[in-house]
Image: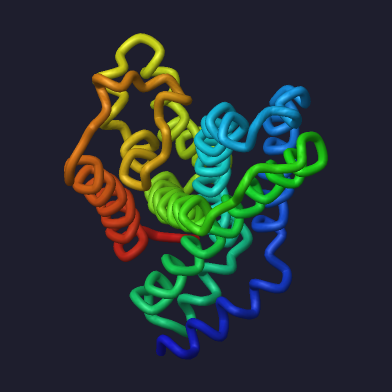
Length: 244
């Protein structure tokens, strides 16, 4: 059953217009963000450039996470709207369709986040000779995109309605940066900032003060709880509700 479900899902990859659209959006957003770094920094010592441009990684990752979540949500709601899910369920059990869709949503989310990161660094390379792109930054960005993709597909399965899911998914992550403007301590526990803190991003760049940041295992525990709540709730909805 799992093999058949994987083959069916793999056939969608080549024509995944949702992934293409999310990746293009991530690229478009990353370019002006990176271009906002003053070109005069090109003449600064490498250490100074690294310090002054470090917040860019977090800003790029934040935008990419929202788009990765939208991808995860859209990938499900588009297939539901177009009858793809209903067709699959005529041939495969629900649990098999669900188990295959979750990792593919995570992989797609990671791809969207990676495009945003690489797009930003291409601009930095063109304007100021670039800044180092280490494996840790790439790994953290991929993990963030995967978490956001899982969050998105969970929300999509709960909401189901295509355009409503777009609003709810983007708001559910993006609201953290708005709350941080007036209640930093509360924002630290919201999904997006919990994800960023777990993966070691500099969250002061998105408005979270140092004194309100979470430390130790707390951000990882919150991240696990948020993702399990979204994926668990979405899975229950998918397994029990009509998808036509």
